[in-house]
Image 1 (cartoon, rainbow, N blue to C red):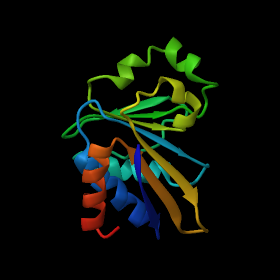
Image 2 (tube, one colour; image 1 turned 180 degrees about the vertical axis):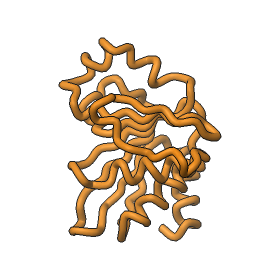
Image 3 (cartoon, one colour; image 1 turned 120 degrees about the vertical axis):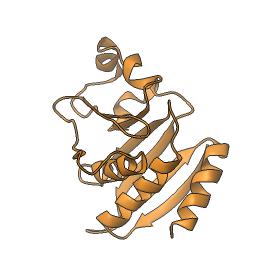
Length: 158
């Protein structure tokens, strides 16, 4: 896997990183998000949604209590939050394949909890606090995908 390190200076910048990433995503892509509570996973997902062409009239919220939300756009976004699951077995019991394969793009918050069922070709995004406002965003994936992502982020000012 190849990776790219970005420092986001604000929630607006985190949103922009997500929007740039969203524009590059394809049907079947899985974006696995990791990071502490409040690190910006949902903010990044909101940007991904806009990059996928999901209208602003759809508020993108974390599905912590519902597990999954789906939004229509250029590609549908399936947004999972697995924080409340104890592990991948819980997701397997729910038939996770329905979420992962073929209906659009899947974004998973707290992906480290179910890492053993996330396909190898997924894009991993690790988010961490730098300080109160800034966040470190590390995007990792296959070399071919990361070349395009790195180029787009550079063109976007990151």
